[in-house]
Length: 390
Image 1 (cartoon, rainbow, N blue to C red):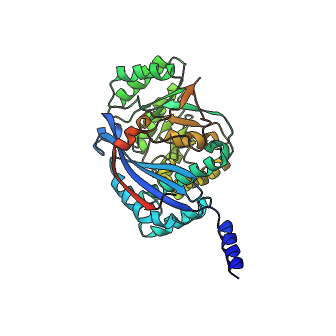
Image 2: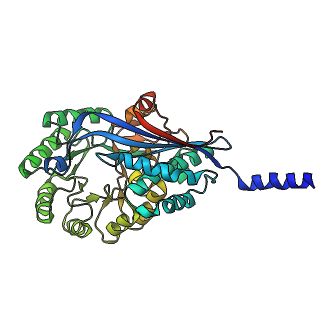
Image 3: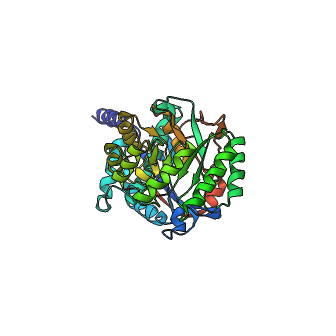
């Protein structure tokens, strides 16, 4: 009888499979070298950006598999993400890490009283991304290959050198540096109170590029509908790849009117914080380039839901920020996408991404392919552990 019970127990453990045994959360605040301003600062809606607050989730299983993911916040929300993540983390202990979609739902219900968008899902994102990283590592594949890659590299454009806080000469210097680094596109900020100054900067950058790279602009939601229509019509002369966030992020009807009236594609979506909000954009034909941000919408599980809907509409994809994550997701999108090159997060990781001939190369390292640097750990402000490390 004892032997029979032992055999049943062993069989039960086999059927259960691997289980999440340990989780560590880290609040890491990355300081920026200089304060950054876009149109939201010039219009008085936000203060200059001085740091990026990152929430990292690391986890290990009974069988020794590991994963790492992160979310982030700018200007506000970082401590809130960390605290919410601490509240819901314990529900993952003892769970099968392969059941990612089910675990996303479980985490969402664990924090259901604060909703399914914004800070609530941004805290979930760190866990979700870590689970996808783990699944790809377990398979011995880069995440892009696990998802089913369409390409080995993705068109990339630089944003971090085109902020309104940078004098024009500095922006022009960044154009040269970006092209020399193998980056294929340049995006600069617009949306100043003086439209003539916006046009002057765009014209100067366009002249400096001289056909060697593509050009995009980003107004960061600072125009109303009449101003946006006037500005966008003047910007059409520059043959831009897209005009980004000309209106408030939630004005899907206004974006739809612009998309219908202009030859230049409209891009938006980065500030939306749920799948439902992206569905509204897609259903109203309000966007040509959709720009979801995996950490902002709840992680890779939710990002893939948006991509499935966007592919049905034949929309182009240009994910926002976090190239370490979005490079893999863009590589698995059917239509040729763009990925945003931001070097801000470089100090957090031991690895670097490679650009060549205007494209970012998908690394062949398993999973997302990054590990935390010693510098990242030095910037840690708080951490919390759950379970027991195997």
